[in-house]
Every structure is written in C-alpha cells, then in structure tokens.
Length: 118
Image (cartoon, rainbow, N blue to C red; front, top):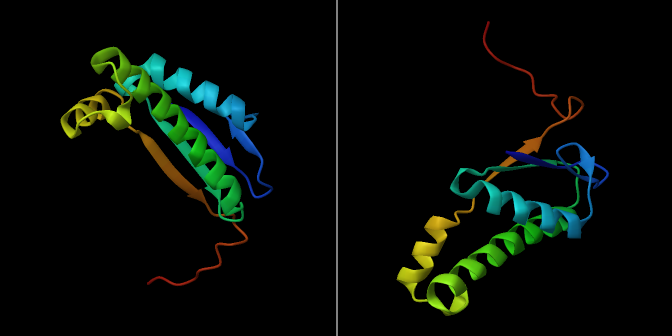
C-alpha cells in the first residue's frame, strides 16, 4: 500500500515525503504496475485542503490507471483502451482495477461534537 496525504496547507506527500504532481504520476504508475491487482492506494485529505489540490491528485491517479490500461489494451488488442469494446474494456479493468481508498482527516479542533448516553 502507498499512502498519499494532502494536508491543510495543500502539501502533498507520498509515504511521508513531499512529492510533485509529476513524481506522483510516475510513482503511482510504477506502484500499480509492480503490485498488479494486489495494490492499494490510500488517499488522505485534510478537510481544510483545497478542492483544487485534491482534484490535481485525483487527476494524476486517473492518469496512472489510464496509462497502464492503454498499455495493456495495446498489448492485447492492438488499440487504445477507449477504442476497445465493452467486453475488452471490462477485461482490462479487471486486470488493472482502480483500488483507491479515501480517508478524510478531521483535526481535533474540528471535532467539537458532544453527546452520547451515559
């Protein structure tokens, strides 16, 4: 599993190390390719992070999957993923599944909910 974190200041880290969007694309593509169906990408976003940063990260993850699905479809069917039939796309999606777990961090200052029964 790899862990991507977007903090409240919109810093993006991969397994605890700051990373650029280009590096994120390269590293996630390599990770998915190396680990096959067994891979898992955990994306944790602070609730105060901007939607723009979150969207940039999501776009890089989708680009990684698209790259690998296109490579696989070219190898199997001689055409890009988008040009494949529904059955062919399903086969490739089964071979290169999107496995992203999203976690939303709530800081202690934000967690002011009280209540419960005693």
